[in-house]
Image (cartoon, rainbow, N blue to C red; front, side, top):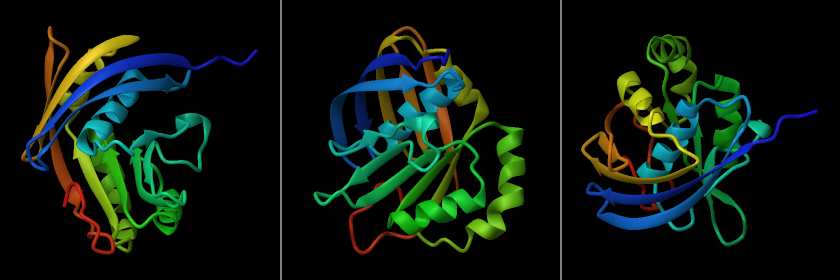
Length: 191
């Protein structure tokens, strides 16, 4: 018998001082049985960093060829592909072929550092790919806030995100490993 995904609901309040974006979002996330709470919460972090009414979650770990989050235009064409974790360069190459802008949020401390050293040469060939690394202490503190029903606030400013659930807080520092290029003149979030 296959294990089923666990549903999480989050009320997310985003104050992105860098973009001048302030909004509340009601999120529903499916946590795959093999997904950690840290990865789940990094997906929430990715949403906060790129918050937009058109931004939605993909099917996650249950589908290898889909983004974790995405924005599509009115015709269904992908405009922004967001992934979290440490995928291989071949997978990111496919993503870059399907969307004009791809953002990767890497996390995992020393594993992420090793992954970057092994992949940065190949990833340099993808001009519209942006790679951000989240600090390990921050993502672990964020994971501790995971609950089936949660209310979170995230303030984004100058490469840091302050997340709070009203009782605990976490500061997640972001390091730009690869800046990426703006796509076709469209206003971009994190360049």
